Length: 457
Image 1 (cartoon, rainbow, N blue to C red):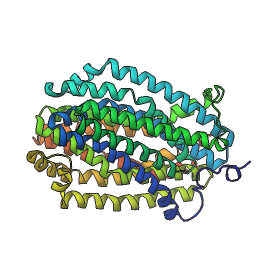
Image 2: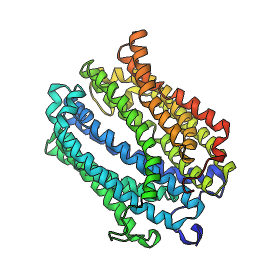
Image 3: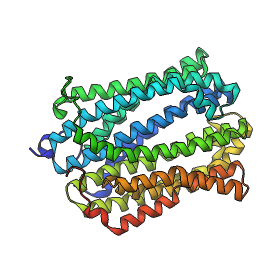
Image 4: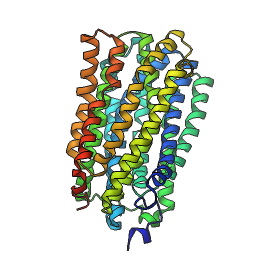
């Protein structure tokens, strides 16, 4: 039975106008990312307004472990998204079913291991991050509590990865809306009313993650006939050849994310050494940078699925055009984000802190990061082709360059050679994706992605 005849979940991304199809598929992903970043920023905003700089530092530093774990969950979800997309394009329904069961079992096992690590190694991690002594207690509470939510992060992302690979982007938006509602209500209740500080924010975060996971699982159960889903052990039996493909595709995704986070851990630890004002500015700025880039990353995520389905269907010309259309859209979005950072930086930073020194320094942070917006727009668009075609070796190289060599190397260059101090840290991050962009463009122009072997073959 063909994918079109049987599969009622998702959209066929191999047909229709490229721009229209991309935007219709991307908009729910962008909105999902916006909601996710908004409720993440609510934590920082509530803490900043009701607890102050110490609370902000505790949430920012204590959340570093979660910021390392989330990319692992998202990396394997992205792997399943690309693999499912190629399977959907090829019409291999039976393999899609086995992939879902294998993915869920593998990711939940990974999350349990990481939960244990987050609890056991909490204090050494915070000391490694140069967490200020005044914020150490709240940061410890935040890290331990949020570690309990790791399985929910993995479960939610796994289901969303499967759905997006099938061309379904609207339902993950509904799942994250559940999480946002829970998070905002509990944040205000536990922090503003019951004055629980960083621990209250952590409890709200875990509850929201549980809500999104339960919503995703409920949808999987309600639509079980379309996934052949069963709550039986045999459904969750790991198919080792499929797991090998997921690991082969997922590890570069995870590696790149972990390398980026490793580089950012070094940047954040270095920023902490400059004192409370720089540390707070860096923490708030990182949240804002992530939020302003959700539009670009959402379009890139949509493009990867669209490219994967078209390569699976052997429509290489359409896959190539999708990459160019994606680049055009992302450059426009980068321009809008940059304009906001230049025109109203005080207003943007003032949402999250009342400290005049932090707001003033924040204007410098945002103006520096306009470089990063355009670099990410170009790099992400062409890297979607690298991801969509399953070029894992290049993925490793890009991860190493983006996360460590360029980010830390350029930061050290600006700090030590040009004597730019903490601004050198921010310039290093802002310019870190430029080299990757050039490599991805070169690969696209080579046309070698047209003849790569499919992951399902």
